[in-house]
Image: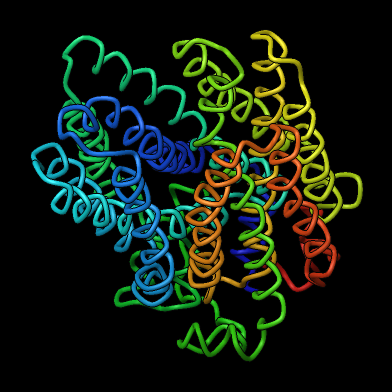
Length: 446
């Protein structure tokens, strides 16, 4: 690739790059907040509206369905029109959806606005993963992506605490969504004024005034301006992302999408059902909620520590695979644990630690598997397919719990798919190369 892209890969990250990653962490936190926000809101919506848990389950699924659609349908346009433009559109959808949800007074209307919010978040997740990868250098890319990924559990912890406080102090559910709308609203000017499209995108896609935009960006990256844009490589000039994926990356795309689906199955069983499993074990409702927050706290720590080791010990295929195995063992141990507060909450922390370490690793595989021209499309397809697992797993887990299976049995059954995630990762050829170990390839940045 071009010299300036190789230079960006090799030079230390500066303050501007750290700022961009920080904004991406916050945006990912909106997803973590959104998952818990509807759960906390349900404590008031269900009695206020007189609806059952089955009806409310559709409101939970609405956001996940929207996320899946956003990842599949809207996110790929970021590879054509830029990550910045799609991120701004997604933020507008999230902001409008959050505020409108607060003023919804029927299941149908709230379902619609939850769907719109999910569309925005699903679109944004794929774009911010590409942003983070393309603003990072080779040495720190896995760490930066891991830090971005911990925005999810951090949003669950901090946003969940705020949501619980709002319900407790106001006795109403509407302020939860108003708070969420304000959080997304304040980020719009940050993205609009301070975050340009990446150097990778400008070189490979050549939007209007690409050279001028590159020369505005390069000083922020601590690099000299250029007189002409370097030539993109031949394989980067095709502007049909789905065609490129199908022609050059089909097998790896299928494998990573299936791997993410199986991982999301386990994650979205553990996250929404952990409080209820704790309650069924005899813990109080407040202790069960605290256990959920602690599980997300474990995820924050797991995501950070994983980023420090992601490129070691044989690269991503080994470290992510190892996190998958440990997540399964932790979930099995949680299922078999005695029903005491300290033991179960401690094991919940460990489950969160390894589950978020796994997703940090999965996000790190995307820039290795998908080149810049199809990166957001490939990431969107992977995340979107994974959301199907996220939609189905809570339902299947609910049936197993309702059938009064032993906790050890349904935790083992629902955790098994993550072992298949490990197997699939070892079958992806790109994860055997130097980029998967945080090294710069001979041909330049990937």
